Length: 265
Figure 1 (tube, rainbow, N blue to C red):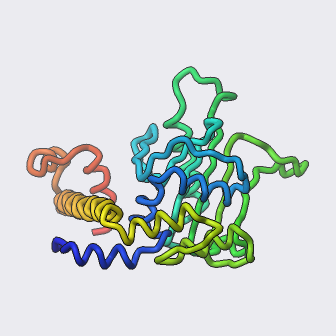
Figure 2: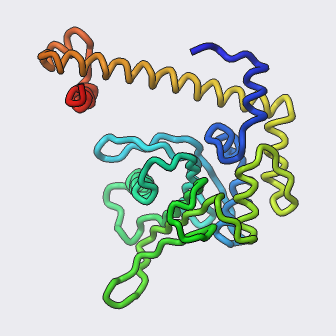
């Protein structure tokens, strides 16, 4: 992959919108911006974010990892993951469920009573109204079918989209997510941080650092995919697991992935 020049990186930064992964990662590092976003989406003007971890890998008990865009800790200890999703090629509901489960497992300790399991909010922001209800925001509740009673098990799922404009403050915020530059007096922290990242030397340097990380990650993923393909070819042509380990230095996890690929060759 060709190395980007500084001017090319600067040009890319100018084209980023709030909802784009690379740009949102930079924005989400600012706790005041996270607080402003969550106060609006959760409709709680007193909400406080006291910590945030961006783009972290959380691994569950079975080894599969999940990328969390912005995992926030609120003042009362509640965990809130803000997820931005531009693609519409997956099952969004199951993705949100998987993310919430991964967070719950990661934040629990052996011996913890289940009544002490932390509250988890998943705020899922997409470019599509995939629920197709014509609403900007949807709150998913767990309900007993026979009685209609709502159950509170500590999981709160909120789906928000940029596609529907209902003229609410939430819709106005979602409109900001689709823009390259934000100048909205309702959201001063977001507006100021977007401007800083795009127009100041320090902001551009931060963005370039994040972009370089994404580029390197993309290269690493490409190399990993090539390794799996080579192992799959060996297995599909009658090679054994021992040969894959001997000649390609394959791990058990890579062999398992390669076997799935080999079935497609």
